[in-house]
Each structure stands twice: as C-alpha cells, then as structure tokens.
Length: 166
Image (cartoon, rainbow, N blue to C red; front, side, top):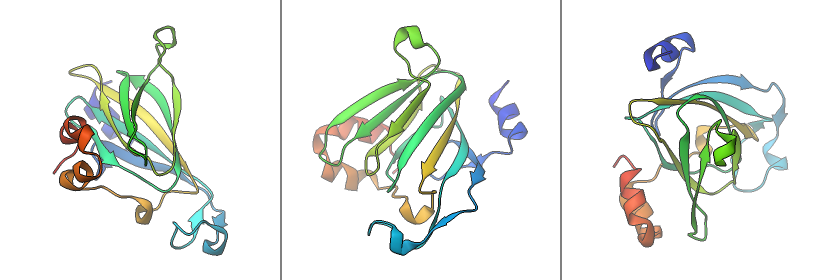
C-alpha cells in the first residue's frame, strides 16, 4: 500500500508532532483525578490507542507525555525512536520486524522521556500503533520549541535540531 492509501483506508489526519494518526480506542472506564499522580490535571480514561503513520518526509518531533507509551510496529520501513531521559541521557531503539537484526516490534517509552521518531528508509513509511495508559489527553502533551529543548540538553543539539519543527 502507498502512504496515501493507508491515510485513506484508516482515515488518518495530521498529528501536531508530525505524521498522521487516528484514535482507535478510548476505554469507557475513567480514573478520577484524585487517584492519579499530581502531574495529571483532570480525569483520564484507563487506556487509549492510536494508529500512527510516519513517512520519510514527516517525522515525529521531540515531545513528551506524562504516561508510558507503548509502540507497536505493523508494516513498512523500520523506524528509529530517539529518547532523552529526564536526566539528559540519550538513547535510541530500532522498531521493526527484522528481529534477526535486533529490531523490536514493540517498545515502551517511559513516562517523562523526550522522544522523537523517524523512518529509516528513504521514500517509505512506518505504520505503527501507540497505546497509552492512563489514557492520552492533550493536557499531558508537551511539544517544545527547538530552543527550549536545546537549552535543557545542549549536548544533544544536533539531534534536537534535526527532529524538531521550530
């Protein structure tokens, strides 16, 4: 399938961090704010899930959320997921189906980590899914300006510059 076919078939729309998405699941169950850590404002669903499509031209810019985020690989090119811990340690993982080459089809980004993702192969796409618990809410989403993130982690200036939009 082409990128355009995937976008049409799964009714994907542009995501603020880059790429395309559609929410596929939002639990009916609710966790009341009084039962959540202080970093959350308001109630949250138990869990949410999305389809997420990145292309060679559209990366997922550095951002962070308050929850762990589980990535699931479906098809296309493998992707490189970049992470910066709250303490400033950089790491990456390759998410894909080539298990013999140490790619992983599923990976958990820890809560509070800054992370970005890009398609490894040119002229390709990575079709993935992401699951978040407690459920995703845009109040938990921080998409920093390039300058702000570089001020926090100056030694990672090159990767931050490449994987931020502004």
